[in-house]
Length: 143
Picture 1 (tube, rainbow, N blue to C red):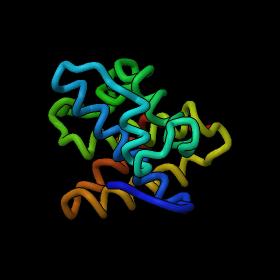
Picture 2 (picture 1 turned 90 degrees about the vertical axis):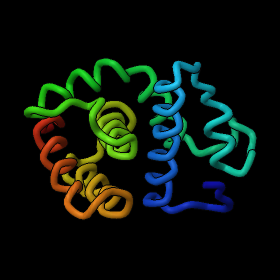
Picture 3 (picture 1 turned 30 degrees about the vertical axis):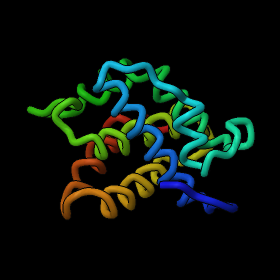
């Protein structure tokens, strides 16, 4: 998903989700995650230092908090587990959590959930957005 030029916030959400998806792919293969390569690749090879802060911050926090976020999310999945979800759904959930909990403390819970629903409606099966909505509504604390 190479990109060029200035991106809207919605486009940056998609890029951040893609970066987290790539990270999850590396993790599933037992490989080390090359943050700079992932981010630079998503920005058409632009030097990492010139890439968008939001995307970098989301990816770094998803790596740093990976295990604790999965544990938290698993606590809200009845008869289901994070590892049983498809990787896109995992990326959307992790993006939402890091955005809300670590990257932008001023963002409203409803905004984060709306973004996740839009991503789910775009990249997942028809009704998967309901699952994403329900998990995030329970997992993300009110402020």
